[in-house]
Length: 273
Image 1 (cartoon, helix red, strand yellow):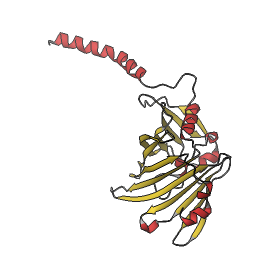
Image 2: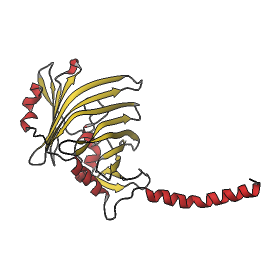
Image 3: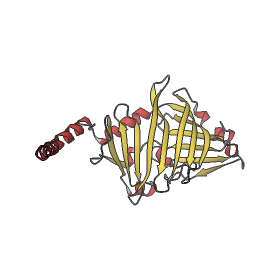
Image 4: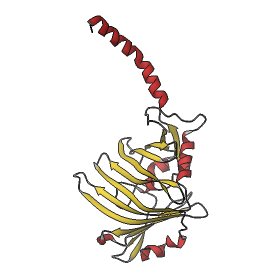
């Protein structure tokens, strides 16, 4: 190819770039007409709703040097008639923390309640539910990462700067009030939602100073039978500042199997049920 032909080829190629960009962008997902960012959050809450759930979870904790520690726990959740939620976590492994348990009561419109049981002391201790940024049992997850979204405390908008690919939207969530800003560990969350099933697939968390702090990824989505509800069987939270991470791998999942609320109580906590 001579110089003149090569130059003409380059000119034609660059003249096509805007068309290629438009074609590529049009293939990406866009919010459905008339649907707000808050609507997608509501769809996620509906997709994750259940009367009760139970599962066995293996937690992997990896430090900055790559050293891995594992813990295994039983996790049960029940939704009460008034819409409040109650969850119990009891550790099964390692032996050194076997029987250690946590009971959480998610209360609508008021502070959540938490109780910690330490079998070595045979004592139950109530812990403050006000600080949502407390870490969940020494992992990179915090309590607010694992509870139901409190929509009344946040404002939502679409992220106009980030493309997530096909069949998804990116929603920015920010605290509405000074109280929420003080209690939350985050100034902003960038949430990626799968529009085909309402599931959250990724979240970028920004600390109170506006710095990207943590990244969440959910994967291995499956239908939980016989209910048919979809859940991620693997979740990973990475502290991008501290360079450590936590994974949760789920097994023996059941949904709406009829968990008795009495199985998620202070009595059950002390008995390791």
